[in-house]
Length: 106
Image (cartoon, rainbow, N blue to C red; front, side):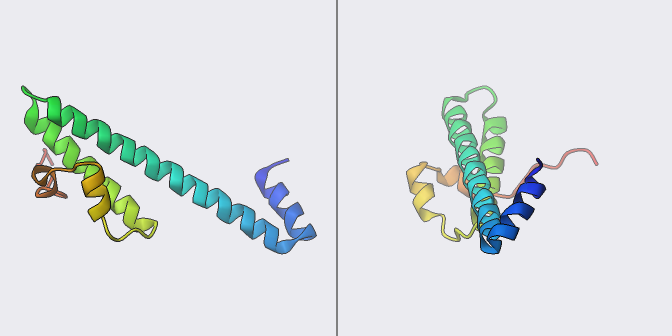
């Protein structure tokens, strides 16, 4: 039985349950995705802290991942980032360049 068949069956029995099940699944996916994005940011910040030779690359990666994380947070309704900036110890060096990506070949 496919997910669609299951949802159709749920709707026949209790219509509101089908919508609730789908909303719960969407919320779980959002939370999982946001958690993964945060883990990527933490790892990038750790790499930046340890970087010596390829510091510019590590800085650009950290900026890109923090920017993506902030966009994802905003998409799920979190508009303020102050708490996570402090919690994750995102440095001004990273914040000042958010969204600024070096140009590559066109």
